[in-house]
Image 1 (cartoon, helix red, strand yellow):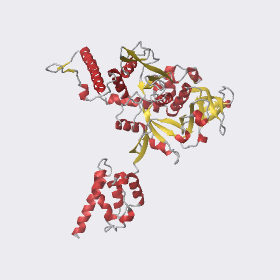
Image 2 (tube, one colour):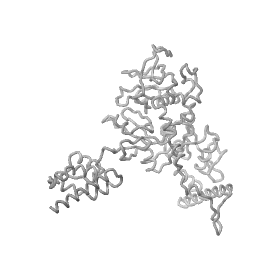
Image 3 (cartoon, one colour):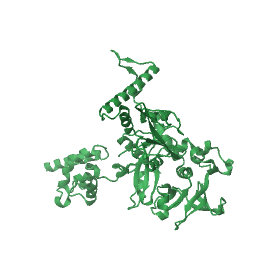
Image 4 (cartoon, helix red, strand yellow):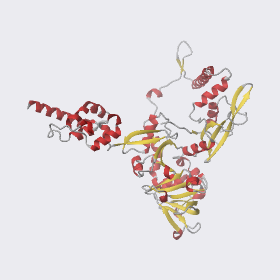
Length: 524
């Protein structure tokens, strides 16, 4: 009887410990490894627990057929022992609070991570920023891509990723992509670039055409009624042909006119509304859907994944498509988009990234017998510049010493320096460069540098300006055996590509705009 009481006390203490650690993070694995043997004297795991166990921890599989049935000697004392062990002592088998998602990068590498079921797109971006040691410039974005429909869209920062995935079909093979999108909130900074004056008007109560400085406010306010209008190509339902119509986008939805450019209610035909729909861009509008241009987009209901359910549209140019897509996002989410835009900056103000030790950094001079603090800002700047040049000279010397005797020091250093830069993409074709820049945002200053395919000795700077991508050849210039690089036929020369990029990040020079955002691809 005494042994029975001792066993009862020990069982209760285990139950109390399990209850304490039921919600504790980081303690479950330790507790589980300590009490896994408790599974054997109780009874085999039920089929649901076994399935989760095999799916999440293949290295720890338990074969029920080999274990056999072991009766519980004290069923009246531990009526819920199996659930206690499975839910508390083996936390990786719990699937109610967490789920595993798979995220791809632009080079199609992927990573599977276990995340809470209520995680948002911004949370996932922050997770991968930390895991990959990326610089958080608020441009990293999560994309939803549906390959069998050849469409994709930006998942807004506040959206629940699990809700997005719940709308996928079983055989749709939809993907999540993690990459930069510099244009995600650019319309808050430069609305003129996104909303051409001839496409935007407001209700008669606000006296016609609005000032663009107040345009965003009209989208965010529920009392005002902005309107986007213009011609679009539309694919007629059940037909392969496309036809041009005059479209009108209002807060109540998207309409087209069946009589020219008439906006009378009797001539406007309803197409879609956005409370339960999202706007996607077509990845291959001409090839897949036979569109007249490559600037296609569509409206898709959240729970429908068939091509016949898409409202297919096509613009004549990128600026027109960007205007329609951006306006649809604003109509759907309104003020929530603005909150997403300002939230990272508010966090920076409340909790600055710089630590106490970083705030107390001072310039030091260690050239003499004793170190001293450099108090003169001009002297500190000149010392920093000299150290940078010294580092570059040492790097060039070290790299050239490992090269062949026929390789000059300047050419060897120029090759080594730019290859390691995030803006250099080596053997990238013209079409691939345009696709990469388009994916990461068609705003002024997005750029990359690549090898020239037509001339192996030269390089190409690909730059976005006014939503168009332009390509500039970087030509090597030989001056008395010394190699330089130039964009303007040798008038402005640079010792390497790094120096060239740094110069045009500060000066426009012959370029249409400064280099501002580099295209970066990471491997997950």
